[in-house]
Image (cartoon, rainbow, N blue to C red; front, top):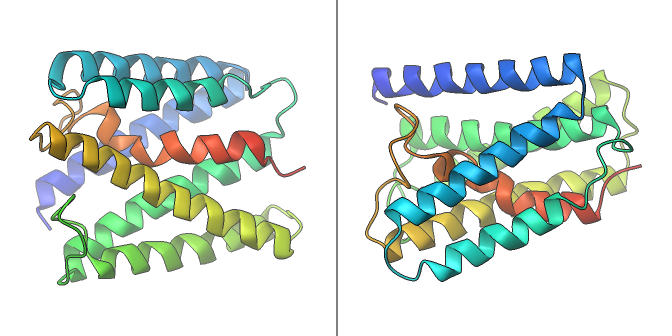
Length: 205
């Protein structure tokens, strides 16, 4: 793993999580505006950097956004939403770390850096850490929750692959260079964009 790149990723992740926590502390509804801003930045990236088949990523983001705006942040249970965010972020982080350190077997041409080791390592760590999160914060652990965690992890992976497909069609390594050490906003929140669709229709009560 390149140390400087990892440090930049860690700094950005810490910054974003800090902003997210500040929004929660002030008013949970501000999270809506934070995510709205992310969608806007992704639209800008697609407009500026994607030249081929631009309609497809635009349509995909619009569908994701349409599901996102159906979420009523006045009624969403904060703890459940935090669990959702934790699942997505932990899968993304540990897939990257394990893949960079132990990955040897690539599994798709869509994203040459993706490895079986990173995929399964991220999957398992995200799953067990999410269960630990639920246990610590006294969320009822049952078959429904287990299925929910597994489904969100799978959707996070699908979201990653969808974004990789769009980039490959446009011969892009990153969706932009908006975020030092990360690439673009689309790159960093690709797992969120598909999994939020599932979250919006299967919120745990």
